[in-house]
Image (cartoon, rainbow over all chains, first blue to last red; front, side, top):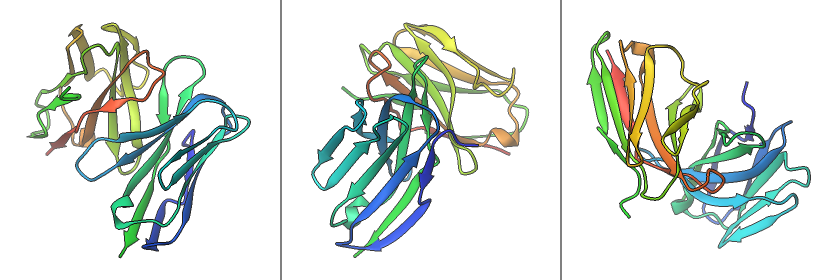
Length: 111
Length: 113
């Protein structure tokens, strides 16, 4: 059983469409991080959200941390083929510096 | 900075053989993590170190797995003896203070036949 549940597991969309990926848990986290991973490489950090209700924007990507610090979402506006990859959410446990990962969302953006 | 450096990138070994994976963290980072990634289980934390001291090894699957960090710039993950079910991609990551984002290496793809 995953501590962090990500949805959807797989998303295939056309270039220019918008999408949202969700990350949910019953646990409270000190912070929530989002990573993007390409084949043959390690995950690369996109953003860290720390405060409940926090919203961060990174160009066409918008990240939100839930008020209770149990969930998060990633919204991509006008997706590009270069956004294709595996998106992982990860929560930093409140006690102990352990970062637990969700199973990931595979995004494919077709041109 | 060259980032987190892992070696080898690929390892193919026979069941029963010893396997050693290596990691050089980013200079100045005080936390080092070993993760394993499989299709079935995703990214799993195996063990992590703080200032070269192992803090939590509860994710290490069996006694066949061991990890060391003899100094701030080097860590190893050893599997002895290896089994086919150990086949996975093993990632090393480092972090400053443990609360900021992690920097991952490119991973070692291990295949045990």
